[in-house]
Length: 306
Image (cartoon, rainbow, N blue to C red; front, side):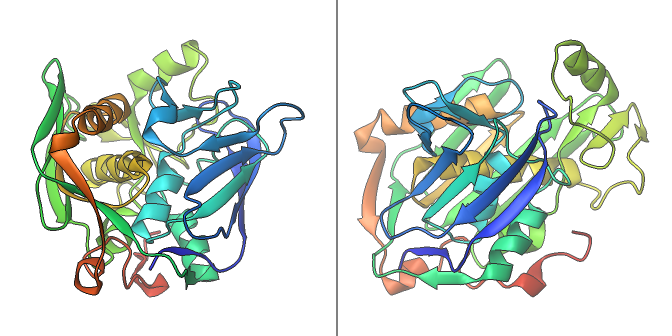
């Protein structure tokens, strides 16, 4: 069955890039509603923005969606990952500003809030996208691809010059609450040189050592260090889940990313949906539904480090 959150849950904080403080509330929604954002600070015109792959507009270092009236909301990947990882299919997210709060740089607080409210089943079946043929997109040496699988898997590899990050690779089957137990509290990361460049360009205005892992060569500048030795690649997998959730429904396939980012993952979805022979939409039976991300998640599964 499709799901929604049992009761509204509110979050507030600054946006990573804008530095603007916003309040955001995730509301329950009916079956077949999907995930929508509503800008409550927009006085005229269409304030609703669909959380779908075709609403994505190019944004630097984050995922930004825009409606036909030009109303937008950015840095949606962490809340989208939380919804997908908790198995939430329908929700209305009201926000009074242009960017989702960054909180601690991960999805942990979103997951805590969602699971704290509880999940309600709806009288509508879940549809799943089954990948039938491998689809791949590239940009230079970076690539993202999706290939057939009987569940939803993510494999990611990163390669940074900074020794504090270096080469990292991880593969997870996302069934059985793997997102909540393995990925949700992994924080966004960047190099000190990137921070300096972004701020010179008017970005990362809300970033600090409390909501991001900042590295400089072999040194980790963030107090307390890492939550995992491979926290960087875990966060890239978190981002990928959030971006893939813009498919609008769960997916069975193996996503593989090498040095991929938000733009490349969205290009992958666009390429997939441009090829009707590469996927099929099916209704989940009871056995199939047990392999969906979010099935059986519990609040106690959130890592203590969150």
